[in-house]
Length: 300
Image 1 (tube, rainbow, N blue to C red):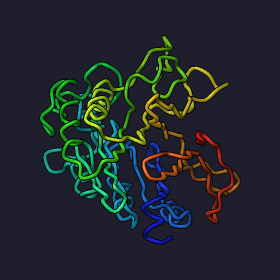
Image 2: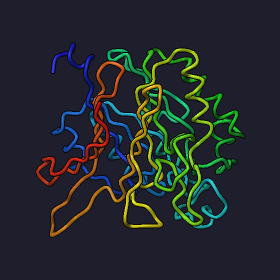
Image 3: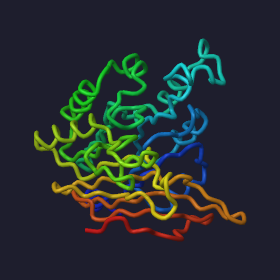
Image 4: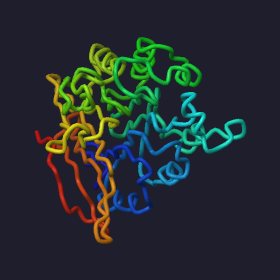
């Protein structure tokens, strides 16, 4: 792939909620697939430092945000009581952030001027919905104490972006994508139904459009595609807005499945041509890094 082609067409991999399922072979699979950029939506595990360490060593341009499980033992009294390490001596949450370094974009960004693309991260540790969860840790670590402050913090990052094209990377998706249980951020536990997206992320996206930013993709996880209230259908993975933004939920969990010694690994792939998403699919890759199935989620 030439430099000029790279600027015109990007192959982006989105890795849904990892939940401790990441191996060196996953990185090899991404190399074999020839992706240009990898986006991680968080929930690496319950403050799973060693999983993050392997991901941080991935030699492909990448960006990541933190999920609620990534602060599992630090954010609540309930979690602190179950903490498997001495919090007076160690901080596994911070270790994850330190390992990721510049790739960690929660309330931050990563500019890729060669592609005229900036990846902007949403609020870390989000549980989803209109309730402000994990309040203490967001205030302590990031100085945000309400959804309004969070939206403004994300928007300030957008205004500092070096590029006109913005990809938003969140753990949970924004509100406004539907209130059915099978919508990308719909509530799928009893009582079923309701929009469980993040209103602060939705507001930041709206503000960004108002200042003329182009947003080809908003990608996230958290709300697993396998629905809790039924096995008959899966969560809808893609929503296309009237502005042409593709919203992609990449949370296929478990992302590694094994049958008779054969492991299949899940990734979402996005083709970005200039400032337009032309294709999005969910794929499974076999032991020999061959794509064995592809679910076409969007095709322009």
